[in-house]
Amino acid sequence: MQPFNLHYQKTKIMVQENITISTLHHLLDYEAGKFMSAEHQLSRELQQWVNTASSVKLKTVLQRYLHDIEIHLQQMDEFITQESLLAVKLNSRIMKAYIDDTNETLLSCSDAEVKDACLLASVQLINHYKISAYGTAAAFANALDMEKAAQFFHQAEVNEKQIDDRLSQLALYEINSRAKAPITLP
Image (cartoon, rainbow, N blue to C red):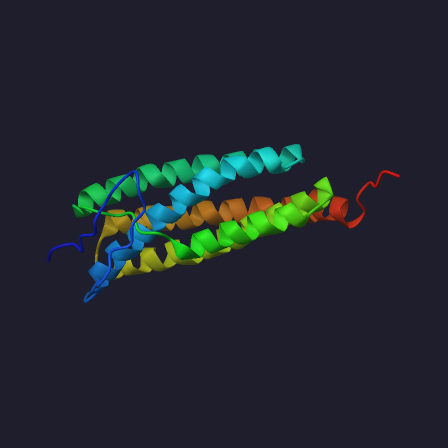
């Protein structure tokens, strides 16, 4: 069975019109294209958000997340090569919406501690979307007996869950309590 081929350009994110997905394998390949785009979009924005965070611990977790995304991108490249996909870069409208919403809300935050809480919550929302997406891809790959791909997608899901746990702990023990009672200057 031929893998589902999409048009790939590194310099421009494109959406190919009239795409037909007729098999689970095609769907997995299509979703891989969206993952690649989403990870690239998030990677670019996450560096900006690291600089926006005022909490050193939040910066550290976000930098770790950025590192994990870079690893996911490398492994996704391997998957794309293995699948012989000519293209993989679709525009991830969902990730764009999450990023746009985060940036819009951050602009409205006037206090650094509240901004950290907003940023953490927004990144965690993105993280939850990615846990679901990678888990679904792992299930598809398992159903297709694609062991290596299933392992990659499962490991990416585990990495996302680990970041989620770090963010939850940080919210619980630092960020939310600081945002609840920010220091206000007269």
